[in-house]
Amino acid sequence: MPSSLPASFVNRLKANFPGDQIYTDPADCWSYGYDNSRLHALPSAVVFAKSHEQVEFLVQLCNHEHVPLTARGRGTGTTGATVPAPHGIVLALERMNSILEISPADRYMLVQAGVLNQEVQDAAARYGFFWPPDPSSAGFCTIGGNLAYNSAGPRAVKYGTPRENTLGLRAVTGNGKSIRTGVFTTKGVVGYDLTRLLIGSEGTLAIFTEAILKLTPLSESVQTLRAIYSDIVGATEAIARIMSQPTIPCALEFIDRSALGIIARHSSLELPREAAALLLIEVDGDRESIEHSVANIEKAAVTEQLLEIRTAHSPQERDELWRVRKTLSPALRKMAPGKINEDIVVPVTRLPELVTRLDLIARKYNLVILNFGHAGNGNIHTNILYDPADASENERAHRCLDEVFDLVIELQGTLSGEHGIGLVKKDYLAKEIDADTLTLMRGIKRQFDPNGILNPDKIFPAGPSVNRD
Image (tube, rainbow, N blue to C red):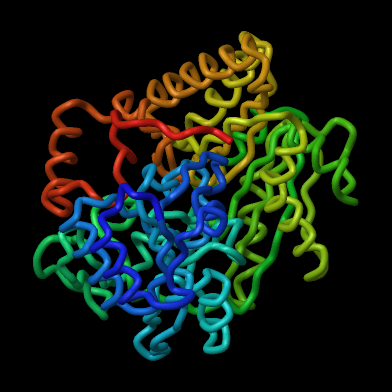
């Protein structure tokens, strides 16, 4: 254990987290210093809590000794939000993984923070329900992580994000106080809405231990369509047309030409040679109305650039379409030594201008930019491919990113739809949030976490950086 931690602190840790509930060997702690951003900082210890009371004790101890504390689910985030402060402690919540209660009649599920998203979906499905947030890492990411980032996924276009699908929370603030927010009902306006404030706060205000999730009944029927266009503008115009008519798809995904090239090399999916963009559209509803809903979507999807539109004819074909979409981001890591992966959002009607100008920016900096994502929300995953070891290319990539963010703000968009800010985007925060609003946010942080121990140096500009591995 590094000498930076007082001996009395170390002894209390070991007394309250015995055996395999604490790692202190750097070799054991090393992997808990990463998340999917590939940033890294070695923690002094990793503590595995098994109860709310243990979380409360640890926060109180860290607060008293002014020791930085970073909560972690499974480390699937991409912005460095779960990378610990150097010589700080990681609180791993992966062992708090119990589903505590399911109430189908009241449409809620009470879970601990370490339960995996897919475990929630499987448990809810046994009663004919689902929890709408479905990030591509659902098989690995925890509910606590989903809430910390407000991570949504494709179904957000119809069913909303975790903020719309979480009724309440149990949490521990930075000064070690246990709080409960929200209600077990779908209506309630007593006091401030702290649930929505805490969701998306990236572990900087409080650590979630339990969540009351709002369940939604599974639809009787689901149909998946694939629409292919000869140019990107035609596809983005179709997105705006689809989202302006009454039938709301439960997913509307966009993939551009460059990303389609990756699909062609890594799957058996056959595409027309002229394909420049693909929309993956899913429609759900009751059996009696599903065909009418599909017909409405097909009609709205027609533009002059439409090459073909067809429906998946089997569950296997549907699963293959989604598998291809969800493996796109990992596949990009093989395309270049480095990538800058952003999850920008603009109003749906501004998508044509966004993708057109992104192409111009890519040409300006002589870089490849691939775009795909949750187009029904205007949420596009923009990936800048580059070689970090090439000084000139590295410099161009970051100037390119700066211009991309300026474009997003110009188009009345936001810098992040679901990945959060963490470490990698905090220096850009002032592009979107004015100084007075940032001051108010810092004040909220101090109220919840007066000693600044919870996930320090995240979200707000300032503070030491960590090393890129």
